[in-house]
Length: 228
Ligand SMILES: Nc1ncnc2c1ncn2[C@@H]1O[C@H](COP(=O)(O)OP(=O)(O)O)[C@@H](O)[C@H]1O
Ligand SMILES: [Mg+2]
Figure 1: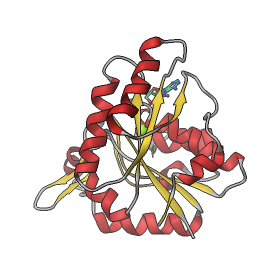
Figure 2 (figure 1 turned 45 degrees about the vertical axis):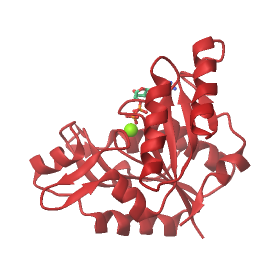
Figure 3 (figure 1 turned 120 degrees about the horizontal axis):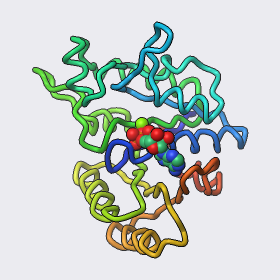
Figure 4 (figure 1 turned 120 degrees about the vertical axis):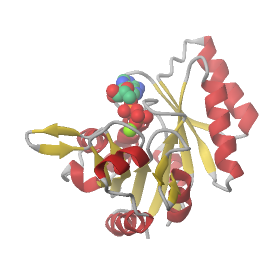
């Protein structure tokens, strides 16, 4: 039996990878067989003649996963643009079937699989004669969502919009993780309260800048994962 969750965010650079690293680290520190999968990644870097997916590298390093980062993604592209465009430039289109097959392979190896998306909730993966949006992949993998959101000004709008949009497509949002949270900041405190008030969804954890651990009970964290 394997369980999974999909980590999305209110946009690019909000801390999906940082938070995912802490999530996988926490599960593994509790002795659980936790893994990571990134369906597609653009902006990979050439390092010593090898294309390295930065997100996968960050998570393997943070969570202590003993696997080559490139093995944790199905598609990686050099150009740091939306995956549909990066794939078009590389003439290597993203196939939903490949993502599903790789995902299934990872779920056979891990009890808790954390899947990190690209950008925000609406991220096009393919726009040629086939249209594939990230939300199609989330549905295909039958995963629920956790939304990583910023803590400061603008957080309410981006967090609530993301949750409502996902729900309008029939996806299940389990809650939010607020990043760069400062518990002494009254705006952050209020954003946390208002996001829950407007969505009726919990903020399951708040991550401070430079946090080395995720402040959440392991049983609560595990409870967010859904059998896949
Ligand atoms: N809580 C945090 N403390 C310190 N640095 C952070 C934190 N969250 C994100 N970062 C940094 O901000 C940048 C963007 O975060 P990242 O997790 O890569 O975003 P995303 O995956 O959403 O694109 C990275 O350099 C990351 O290390
Ligand atoms: Mg990322």
